[in-house]
Length: 449
Image (cartoon, rainbow, N blue to C red; front, side, top):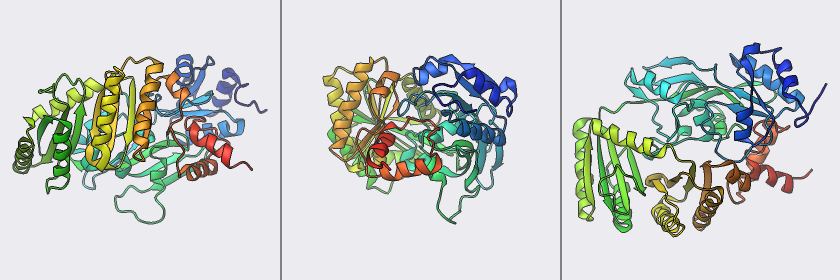
C-alpha cells in the first residue's frame, strides 16, 4: 500500500517503522514540524541505533515517498531554505560514539551524532584538536556541522571543515550504504566523493560516520587586537597577507562588541598565533609594530587571556537569530564589509560583522529583527556582494525569511551540476525536499524532460 507524502498519517508511518526500529526509538514531535516547515502535522522522529537501521528506514521512506529530514542536534535547521512538509526526521541521537581514534596518525572517526564539544574534549586529552570554531550551540553535532559546512575564525589558517574531512560513511535515500574517502590522510585514489556531502544541507544522504584529520593543540597562544579605521585596517590586512608571518586567526570585527577595548573604533582586527612561546611572541611583536605604524590602537592578550577573548566572542554572538554568510574575492572583502556596515547603519539595523579577511568570507550577526527587517538586510547584503561576483547565504534566520528567499539569491553556473547530482542520488527527491529550493526550481524550469 502506497500513501504519498501529504496524505500519510503519522500513526501509519510509526507502525511501519517499528518493523525495523524499536518502538521507543520512534516518537512524534509537533514542535519540530512547526519550527522547521511551519506544518501542523507531527513529524515522526526515528532514532536508529546503527547504520543498518538507518538504511532500512530510508529504503522504506523511498518506497513510500515519505519526505525525510536528517536531524542532528537541530541547531542548523535555520540554515538555507524551508523544507517541504516533513514526514520523517532521521535522528543521529544514538549514532554518537567515537569509532576509531589514532592519536599517532592524528585521525579520528566518529558517529555523526557526536557533539562537536564532546569530540574536542576527547581530543584535547591527547593535545589534539579539530581546528574549527563555528559560532554554534552546545548541542551542535559533527554531522550537522559537516552538513552545513560550518566555519569560524580558525579557517583563515587551518582551512574549512571540508579540508579536514577525509572520509565518511553515508546512507543514500534508497538505503544503499556508501563509503567515501578513507580513514587515512593521504588518499588519492579516484574522485573524492567525501567533499560532495560537505555543505549539502542533508539533501543528498544521511551521514552516519565521519573521519577527520586533526592538528596539535597550540603550545602557546598570543593574541593582538588592533583597532582603527577602515583604511588602516585594510592596509594592515594587506601587509599581514603579504608578510612572512603565519597567524592562526585573522578576524576583522565591527559592531557593538562590548568586550573589546577601543570600542569606538570602526574595525578591530583580532590576530592570534598558535606556535611555541618564542615564535608566538615574535609574531605578535611584529604585528604590533605593523599596526602602530598605521596609527592603530593595540591590546595584547597572552595564554589563558586569549582563550577568554574567543570564549567571549562566541558567547556574545551565539544568541544571534540572524546570521548571513557572504563571500567575495579576498582582495575586496574589506571594501564589501564596510559597504555592508554603512548600509546597516542607514537601516538602523544594529548588527555585528565578523570577517575572515584572508579567506574572503564574512558573517553578519543580529538578533531580534522582525521578518521584514531580516528580509531587507539579506537583500541589501546580496545587492552589495553581487557587484563583486560574490554570494550571500542565510546560515540562520526565521521561518518567514527563509520562506521568502532562495538559498543563493541568484542563478549560478553550477546549478546544472548540483541539480544533476541531486537527481542521480535522490531521483524521488525525498531528502530535505525544498531546502535548496532555488536549485530545484531551476532544474524544473530549465531541464524539463
